[in-house]
Length: 124
Image (cartoon, rainbow, N blue to C red; front, top):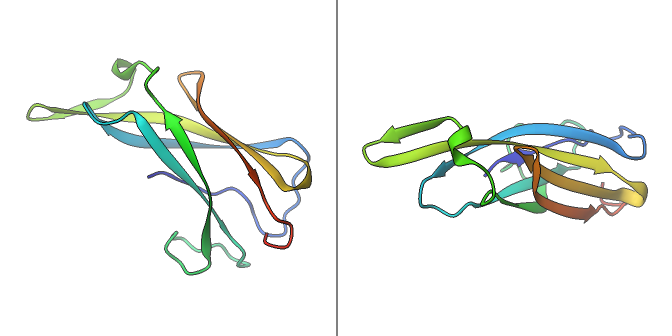
């Protein structure tokens, strides 16, 4: 599962500022094209390197549906009869008013997933 991290503790972001993170997720032919990207948060002054750190919390899951993308456009490898694609996509997080984050996954120019997250001010 790809991991997304954007928000720096104590940093102020302009309204409607958008941060983008490029990601790659492997996909084996025949598996579900519905993938999950986790968005994490941490209240520590220095963000840890790993999501299994005790101070890291799952903020949201962004469901990405790659069913409408052209698999042939992605790098692929073959192991025996099994084909694996490397699906590249971007997650855009837009910082809205009152702690609202709008998260969008984009692949091949089309939106493959969206969610909105309400961050509690006292939490983050």
